[in-house]
Image (cartoon, rainbow, N blue to C red; front, side, top):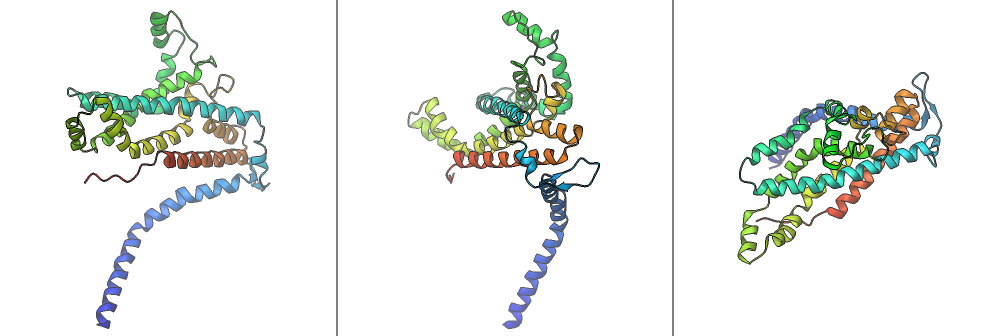
Length: 299
């Protein structure tokens, strides 16, 4: 009996050892390219470093310099405006499109493909194209002139420039999030709707009592990744406006680039990246806690 137990222990140990050996390259890759850069960025944030000389430790001075700093506060305002202005309409519009496509019987796959197609275009290429469309003599102003008799300086007027970037963001991401909502809708058993219809529930009641409650896990996921994506936005602001006019679109990611690579203040840039990381983490945890759904069994 002892020999049998010993043999089983050796067999399980060898299996686990081989399993660990197979996943070891992935672990090393993750540690080297994810964990180490995070630790390194935090260390650099505690130093004064200009890429030309060795980092000099200065403690929390980089973080203290942001307190009351107008450049930092303006960057936070621009970021929060973009996050709220892009995430909220994106959630509503993508959910609306998902409901329509779920019920649309004809060419739904084709429409879904058309909605998703902007997602495969590089953000830089899309920004260049939209920069031409937003030109004072471009197609967008041609449309607004015909519809409302007005034209706008989309990329040089502080009052509308954020809307211009949000329009591009919605155009590019709508199809992707619509597909996510569709996958959540298709995971709801049809028997739930059939039972509700037999009980005389209206279309609106089926939406509010069945679809939306059971979509809460999908909503939590979409809300988290769309918020993270919005906070990390860089390409649209850089290509369309370079942070202008008058820093109106100088979001945090663009500020990090400017501080680190243009002004060679890597310590401040790293500190700002750490701050952005913690803001994203806190907001994501809050969202997941608020939107978190109870365990639902479809069996």
